[in-house]
Length: 165
Image (cartoon, rainbow, N blue to C red):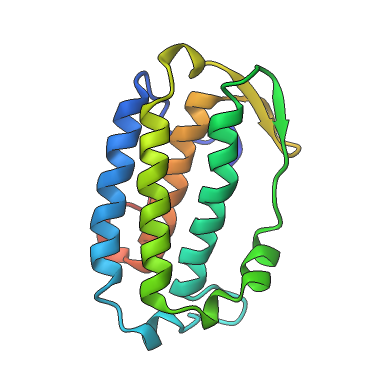
């Protein structure tokens, strides 16, 4: 998650973010499938993630944010743990996973999250929460930031996608 002062869409209607998430995922998954599996395993530089590892990281992000999206609706002012992103990517060895299987899991999980986001009642979008040691943010801000984060990483894999904001 990024600093709460950075720009992220703040939805007035969660269904807008859900629709944009679903559209981004459908388009990206189609383009990801055009990437050769050997190319998907290439790291652009030492210490940088391969496309496989980026998609793995996005799966981890989906798993962590899924809980936040649902649990934040239970009560205000909850604190959620952050997670050690590099450790999660290494521990799950995304490099050895089948590229098509990673894409399928990423796509299915995010289409489910679009459904979850669409079901968030408008009145809970202002519910405040914290992630790790971060500043308080609203649930609406968090779902907007999730979409921004996903697009940023899609743009790393598909620079021509224009979704690097």
